[in-house]
Amino acid sequence: MPDQNSPVIVWVRRDLRLTDHAAFHAAAETGRPVIPVFIRDHTVDDLGAAPRWRLGQGLEVFGKALGDMGSRLVLRAGPAREVLEALVDETGADTVLWQRAYDQVSVERDSAIKSALKDKGIEAESHTGHLLFEPWTVETKQGGFYKVYSPYWRAVADRDVPKPLSAPSSLKAPSDWPEGDALEDWQLGAAMRRGAEIVARHTDPGEQAAQSRLGVFVRDRIDDYKTGRNMVAEDGCSLMSEYLSLGEISPAQCWHAGQRSIEAGKDGAETWVKELVWREFAYHLLWHTPHITDSSWREEWAAFPWNEDERRSEVIAWKRARTGIPFVDAALREMYVTGRMHNRARMIVASYLTKHLMCHWRIGQQWFEDCLTDWDPASNALGWQWTAGSGPDATPYFRVFNPITQAEKFDPEEAYRKAWIAEGYDSPSDTALSYFDAIPESWAITPQDDYPEPVVTADEGRKAALDAYENRDF
Image (cartoon, rainbow, N blue to C red; front, side, top):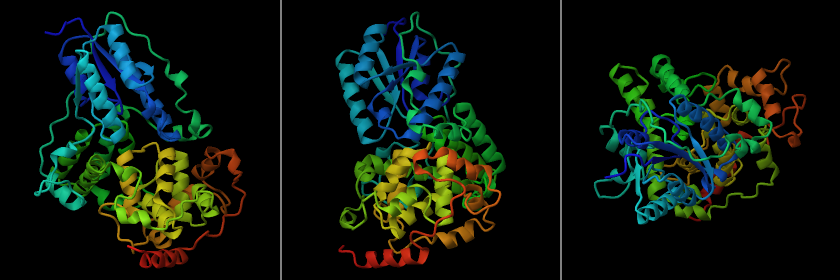
């Protein structure tokens, strides 16, 4: 029998919540002291500027939530195995619990830690919580993994998803808390520089904010989601991706909210649940084919002659949101000001880079890794490869989104473009002007500059892309 005075360590990762948190639930059930710890290891230091800043925001709110129930979040920096072993020695803990990650780097780290702790006689246990369906539990009839979304959706659509766990009513504190770092000393937002102040105006971190946003969405907007999600100037999306990326809400909470909306006859509910399952599909692929994050999923696309020179003027213009294509530039500016980008706009931005400019999808993927507060390794990789044509279930190579006609269809009143572009307007919006406060001063861009001519027009880019695809060697 475990010593009832021996603490349980809960290793907190990208799961900054108390509701539907299997590791916290299991720890509280023991009745023993619980020590929550967050470790700043290489997986944190390797994050891009915006997601690392957003993580800091989430940690601050989560630490306060734990404090409100008489607990605290211990912060430690260093290799995760060394930190956990040191905490075990310091506190006398004989149990370490955490919730699973699915990227290869984290899986290898966690497996090594579990083995090392067990060798020392420490109970080490991982729990589900980041996904609805563990990737190894969803198989085709032939026993392999799914490579196409539609049959994956059909395979899981009628599965039972356990009801979300309640938050622990209390977490027993240890008699002595181990020392930890101060969050402000970590300077997680340093790389954001002056952009942090701008993005913070559009960020509402934490579990409570996530649940509030979900509640408003299913009450007021999910019914119109099927069409509203594509109208880029409207608040038609759930905005759950930011909260899911840090585990401030669980996918099960979202799933059951969606199912209740389906049962209530809300038209857009199933479409939204399918988007939630698209995230699951991305992790399904990440688990089974981890190379999706850094090389073409379809091996034959490795030979495609994409431009990989980020110093080219066209790439610089794309990164600075000065392509001369208003829809593309507006979307990128939305990202710099808010940390997010509308999903429809992401497809247009990605298509313009990979097809009109014929640039490697990795350039865009890595740029988004640095700039998105809702960055997610699986969804980001799948989204870029889907658009470029090199990934699973990809958009056909001959489908080249026309950013002009897309704008006419999904921003017919030009409201989105006016909201984010200042040049050429007598009275630009506050959001459009915020772009100039968020970007690096070294870019030397001002609202008084002339709006640029297109670096590549929609028609020229489409023709060049189709010529390259038709002459490919595979």
